[in-house]
Amino acid sequence: MLRGKTALVTGSIAGLGYAIAEALAQQSANIILHGLEPLEQIQNTSERLQKTYGVSVMYSQANLTKVSEIEHLINQAHETFGGVDILVNNAVIRHVAAIDALATASWDESIAVNLSAAFHTSRLTIPNMKKKKWGRIINISSVYGTTATSNRVAYITTKTALIGLTKSTAMDVATDGVTCNVLCPGTVPTPPIVERIAGNAERAGITIEQAEHDYISSRHPTGRFVAMSGVASFAVFLCSDAGKDITGAVLPIDGGWTIE
Image (cartoon, rainbow, N blue to C red; front, side):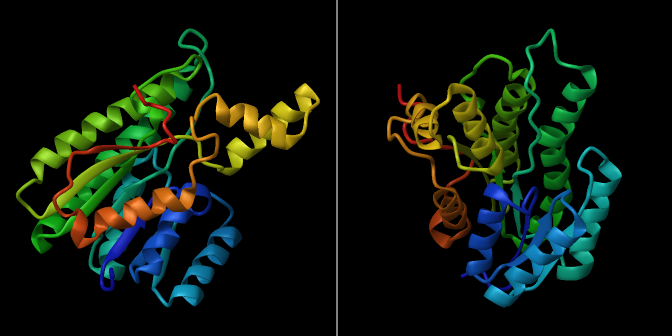
């Protein structure tokens, strides 16, 4: 149980981030939701977590490309909950383009959201974690943190760098009761992936079921999506007492995608 702990999950109004936030709420952690979705959607999500799990929930629409807004978010967390105990850096932006076609602005945005935001949230929350001699930082990378494909230069670069950030952070806080690990999921059924598969089906004139099979089987030897609930449960495990000696680890949850 994580009663009395506060978890900040960036990019958590829907998809994998929400699954992780909900799993932590199930363990009685207070939750700080974050996202740029419409305010009504954020409020509805916040109320659902509060009513279902009886935890306190705060939300933020901080723009992660702006350091001042990240700092304001962490200050709000201190004022409301006395600080962040569990930090999950999940927010991500994806630009599909080869290196010679990617706009400079898209590169800069990817670096800011996918990588620099994790640095800033970590540097701002670690002092409080050190003071309490307890903290958990979980960075969400991807199978593309350890492999590559075409037309994803910004995404792959940032997800790879996130692994280096994790390892360095883990070393810096190793004696302070704080752990830092990185999860590398395969394909999870987030809304963008589901929409992409639906588009593939329409273009190929096949059923969505067939398009899903074709998409997943080319990646996962298991032949199925990685369950968001499974990734979320892994995050909860890392926050439990059983996970206290796991730090600096690169943990694949990818249906066998990266088997060598």
